[in-house]
Each structure stands twice: as structure tokens, then as C-alpha cells.
Image (tube, rainbow, N blue to C red):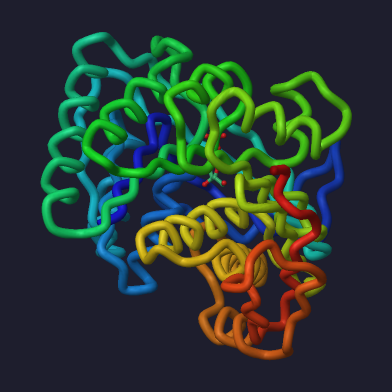
Length: 332
Ligand SMILES: O=P(O)(O)OC[C@@]1(O)O[C@H](CO)[C@@H](O)[C@@H]1O
């Protein structure tokens, strides 16, 4: 069971236009869907037939729309009612594949509401940890009213139950969570540099490892994913994709990493899978939806190369259209 937590979910509105021109009127194709990073992760996992549940606080008119869409789509969820109104995000996608986002701040969460969210997550994890390989996924920006260390609190609960956590957030909440020992943190390259104030991504990822993360996976758009782990450093590059919608590509890679953790996969396979699923998501026009045929193709097309290896067991020459290479040996 993979439990995803989205503390600031959204009604995601996607506008598709030929090209965005400031100062003019557009007549977009419109799609509305339940969103927020952890919701996208759960939607992806559910489509792949994995046992998952999305935990999310919901309130107001758009909160009801989010709940109704999750019902219709059949995505398993556990909603905690809140007094505030769930936010909207608007993404304008151009034919070229350029996406421009407008993410509202979202509601304020009160102390009692936070206690209810915590209790719901703890109870789901207790049940999940009893008989399945459980993983906790914490994704997205925090809503107002919550302290920077709330992710740290949830990771500590999960760790006490032996459940590994993947954290996908930025800034102070990311830094505050590291000491709790998340199994994987997944900032994008920009967030990585921003959080550490460093200019070299490798040094920035090492800094996060030094502060307590057990692995750092950073995404850098078409340049792919790099995993810095205690076992070594791997890079997986997705195939080039023209057009599509990059929104939610990171959530797809988190879904793949969560499956890898649940299954006890090795890093090269996990990272290749993450790059394949995220590229297959970019091909579709919506976050949380992937092209299943492309995902299969990307995973099993061309033979990939591993340029070095850290141990004899990690000699896996994965068959894929994606190059997954070990680019460094672990420091002893
Ligand atoms: O404002 P946050 O929480 O950082 O990001 C929210 C969001 O932009 O991320 C997803 C794509 O990753 C969208 O579904 C969603 O609305």
C-alpha cells in the first residue's frame, strides 16, 4: 500500500492554447481534474494497478469538485473536511509543450484540522504496515497555517512504523524534514539549488544527504533524473519529447520511485522506470495521466548502457529506451 499525502490539493485547470500571447484574449480547450502532487502520484499508481490511497484535506466548492472527480475516476482517497476552501491551479499549455502555471496559495489549515490529518495518516500507515510493503509519499507546497516541520512530523510517524518516505517539496519544509531521515527526497534541480543556496547540483544533493536524507533524486527536465545515494550516483535520461505537457512529470517519477521502494528494486531499475513513466506522462496533455504504450516502449525498447558499477549485483543492463548509467562510485 502506498499512502500519498497532499496537504494543499487543488482543482487543476488545464488550458490548452496554440500559443500564449500576453495582452490578448485566448479561447482555450479546458480540462478540470483533481490535482496536487500527491493526488497525481495516487492517480498514476492506481492506473498501474497498485494499492494506493490519497489523503487530502478538502473544503469549499472546489474541494467538493475535487472529491467528486476522484470518485468518478475511482482513485482511492481519504478526505479530511476543512473549513477553508480548496485552491485552484491553472496551467496554460502551448502546442510547443511550454507550460505556464498559476498556483493559488490555498486555504489555511487549523491546529485541530492538522491533528485530524496526522491521525488519519498514522492510522492508514499502521494498517498498511501490518501486511504489505508500505510507502509514504509526501508531496507539494504546504498550505497556510502549517509549520515548516509538519512533513518532518509525518516522516517520524512513518519511520516509527518502519515505513519509508518519499518527500517532494521545496524550501524550508524540505530542509526541516531532512533530519527525520526520508528514504528519498525529490527536488527538481532549481529547488535543489534554491534550498541549499549552492550553485553546483551535485554539491547541493550531497548537502541534503549530509543533513539526513537517505537518497536525493533530482529532476532536470529533458536532462533526466540523477540519484545520489549511499551506494553511488546514477543518471537516467528520458527520450526526447516534442510538445506534450511537462506538468506532473515529477509526480510520475515519484510514483515509480514509490513502486520501486515497495518492491525492493535496485537503483538503476528504479531510476529507469521513473524516467520512463515521467516521459510517458509528458506525452499526454494532463498531469497524473500517462501514455501506457509509450511507458512500455520506453521501459523495454533499446538496450541501455551502464558505464561503471559499484558492486557485482548492480550489473543490470536494463533493456530500455532510456540510458541509465552509474556515473560515480560511492565514497568509501
Ligand atoms: O503548488 P504545488 O503544491 O507545489 O504544486 C501543485 C501542482 O502544480 O503540482 C502538480 C503538478 O506537479 C499539479 O497537479 C498541482 O496543481
